[in-house]
Image 1 (cartoon, one colour):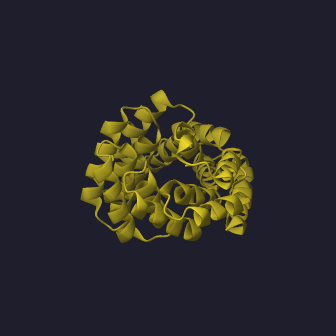
Image 2 (cartoon, helix red, strand yellow; image 1 turned 45 degrees about the horizontal axis):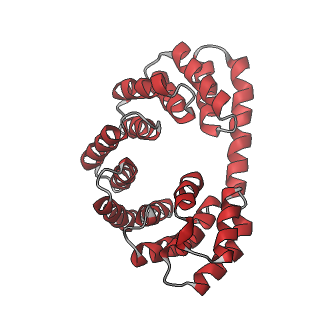
Length: 259
């Protein structure tokens, strides 16, 4: 979210002359989101009706996974200027991160009304619908996201594969995930989900290869470590499984501690 936001912001820097705003945006761009917050809070106080400053503040919070703080800022940006790039989309995603799926869906539909060709909005809607138990409607939105993305990003395909896994459709998940990996062989998500699908289908050697690639791309993935450990056990290679069980437990503890 931060990288995409800063790209948009660079093209729109002339929208404001607020020094605090400029400093805050620069800090977000450098990965110093916490340091950016005071500057951006002052910017919103100085220009409370400027949607761009509220969106910037929301991004600073979201970059720290403080979605409870990001959501009101994104909501304000969306209310002030629904056509501002990604304002309503970011609001919907923050709501989704807070498990508020109905309002997330409404915000994402508002984002889609402004930009009907946004694969990101379709993907967000698909995930909100899935969370609401509306699988058939969600699948249509996943297909729309894939169609509009034109294979330029691994997210829609990886997310669709994960959706199919959650539906218990392990065989159906294999082809779309393999397609993602033809374009993005280093996608940790696609390799993890394909590894799980293959594991469920009993294709142990292929599953291990995918999951090892996932770990190479994302070494701190507790899920990938746990899955490859299970695959090794099922393949009769328990000694190779043990380090991955330990890594899975270690990274899961670290993840819980960060929260």
